[in-house]
Image 1 (tube, helix red, strand yellow):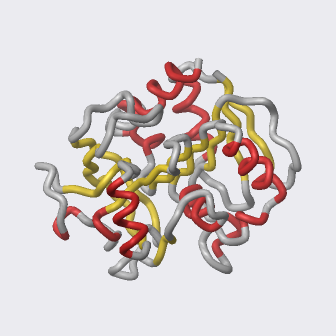
Image 2 (cartoon, one colour; image 1 turned 135 degrees about the vertical axis):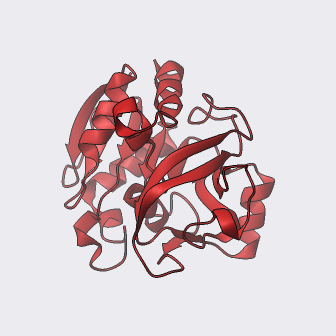
Length: 228
């Protein structure tokens, strides 16, 4: 399985992503944001960081990078796309996923492990988990507060397009388990065909025991198995 990792000025999680994917058995290629074409691949990944320094609005400038035309076209052809943290922000800014990511409700940067509830196992991204499973994965963001209008939120719910929600260790979905104020505790969502996933937590930082946990490993193992 071949994966292309997109690099923007300010990306800082590409090595972690490369390591997690290669440990799962994938081959990876780094692709610069200024390139007009991406190599043939089975998966495109937009890793975390601070694209263009987040000087305008998180992900807004990156959404207009030349490579994003190819990413959008590839997604339209059915190539899976994974956006993590800043990558999730880019996916919303370019219209590949609905909603926006706003400042955390407490207006502070958050960097710690959080608990997530897996909302569905019916996707190539979440097939390695069980529906309702509670996993622990780190977050590191200042703008992770997911927002969309009520109609969009209802549609995401009704179509089964919520991938992960923030939760307490016992799986409760409420304020106590919500680190950033995200609407309906949303931590990750799919596009209509579930071939594009955007999520704020960093599974690549929970894919090796030496990093303190392996709850993110199933995401990469499942992807490689599905796309090999």
